[in-house]
Amino acid sequence: MSEAVLLKGGRVVDPSRNLDQTLDVLLKDGVIAKVDEKIAARGADVVDAAGLVVAPGFVDLHTHLREPGFEHKETVATGTRAAAAGGFTSVCAMANTMPVLDDAPAVAFLVRRIRETAVVRVYPIGAVSHGLEGLELAEIGLMKAEGIVAVSDDGKPIANGMLMRRALEYATMFGLPVVVHEEDPSLVGGGVMNEGWASTRLGLPGWPNVGESAMVARDLQLAALTKARLHVAHVSTRESLEMIRVARRAGIAVTCEVTPHHLTLTDEDVARSSYDTRFKMNPPLRSEADRAALVAALVEGTIDAVATDHAPHHEDEKALAFEDAPFGVTGLETALPVLVEALLVPRAITLQRLVEVLSTAPARVFSLPGGTLAEGAPADVVVFSTTKSTHVTPDGFASRSKNSPWTARTLRGRVERTFVGGREVFARGAAPVGGDR
Ligand code: DOR
Ligand code: ZN
Image (tube, rainbow, N blue to C red; front, side, top):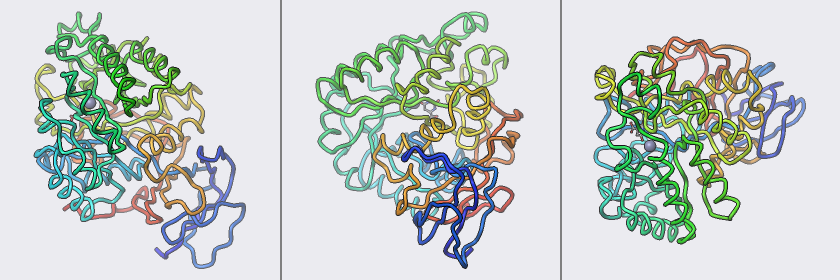
């Protein structure tokens, strides 16, 4: 491929400028060189984008890349290739690796692996507490110097209120959002799925809505007190949404994300699956009333962004009884088709808002580059179809793990090409770029 790429005649959707128009887009020298009608660019590789959407590359605020320590589940190489295949040009990597990303050398190691093996942009998230133990603060300032964009103990809640207060105070000094996995351990106990009629029928221990919303209440109060930036990860209950809505109106600096699975599946899908551990994640799939409230909040803006919570696990680990298997589902390679099939096709969301919540909004939430096709911006671009279908076949995933609840489903929507800094990192049907190191 030559230096320049001309994407011809696509439907250009750029929420950063409220743009939705058939145009050409020229990628040159790593940036968006021009967006216009009928661009002539001699020497550029021409891609026919007629009938396809051309949008700013997706930005995932919540990805588990598992390196270092759990390379049998995923690596920076395989996880970022999965991201590219899903149209994601940037991902934020969670801290629950082994060792935990809780000090400067750990972050520096990951940054080196990113430089050596990543095919999309990766932004590390540092831990809040040492070893994710919830006892003492991690080296937040030193990790910031190594490039973290947020702090989070994701996978685990911060049970101690005083530690949470200190985390908010420190993170604010360094201009970092605190990303919270809201779960009150004393209320959730050993819950493995949503507490309700479905869990009763299945005889599985329930994880009640209040296990999340009680912690959201505490943290909104602490964010108000400390004037810190709070970001609620994978919000799943209507009670949490109601409090976040009120807090935002009151001027509290809170943002939140929702996953494709919480937007589209419920605890009845767990029941129908007959104990299929591909439907086990934390927080669990909720009731239909919660799911509908999440969709409404995403459309209306109380929820800022979609984040995948891509949580790869090895087949052998997932091949356990429902109560014993680890929480988590993969998401990078299915996010777009899941949302197109479940929300765009039935017109629950507009194409403009769909691109916004996958790209422009998450970039803003963590102040990351990207999320725009403005001239001069990094040439991070996704080209996708809203009419062609994806057949979900985990054997063909770039991800090392196959724990997808959409396995064997055929979903409208298909990512065709992904560019990072003007370089093509994914093209449907082509061999994947980057070695699996
Ligand atoms: O389902 C989940 N999986 N939720 C989490 O909070 C952690 C994640 C993981 O690391 O597997
Ligand atoms: Zn989590």
